[in-house]
Image (cartoon, rainbow over all chains, first blue to last red; front, top):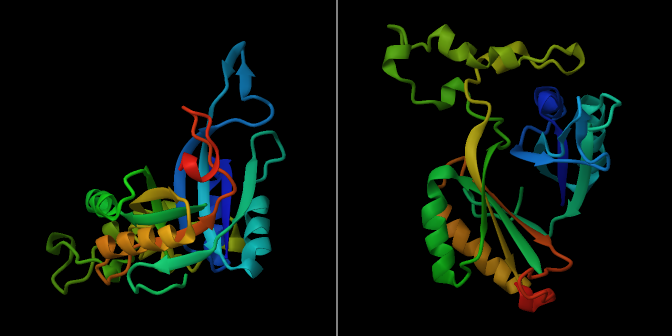
Length: 105
Length: 150
């Protein structure tokens, strides 16, 4: 199992979520965060904004679905300008479902 | 080292904290988040509907069910059946994300069991627990690394 953590633009939330749901991945956790990338935030009229509001989306999927999920997020969250975000994929050893007490997604 | 990440019901945070303390793992990070599981949020038929919102035949009023209508995607490629968006008044639910870092896998299983017992209702929405490997931990105060920093 893999955990896909994507930091995306907040305004791209519904586009990404609907695309994921249509592709069969309705489950997700959203975390509102503030962040910056290698451009160190942005400067507008001389004012420095070094932390920009972003949305972190956390999805846990089986290994074979990682590509698919990343492709969907990349397609729907892209504007081509700096600040589109990053996707991190991390390993997950095991998953428990509390309501069934089973070791599965 | 392992990181136990649990997404649980908002109201169960206090008793989860108590359960973790009793199990001997007081350290934790708690983040308020929004989430949903494989059901994709709550649909009208899952709700115990307020009778004032239902008409004489017990049907849910249209205005209540169209709460999520503005979320219908504009991109036809990914358009859902419009009905499913309309009959889903609560697409996202408030949850709490709890992260506990422990030294060994046995500890991780103990933490998972404690969280599971504290949050079990047997109904959907109880949450998920993820156990992830962790390369290193550094205690900022002392600069210690690895298991003694946990």
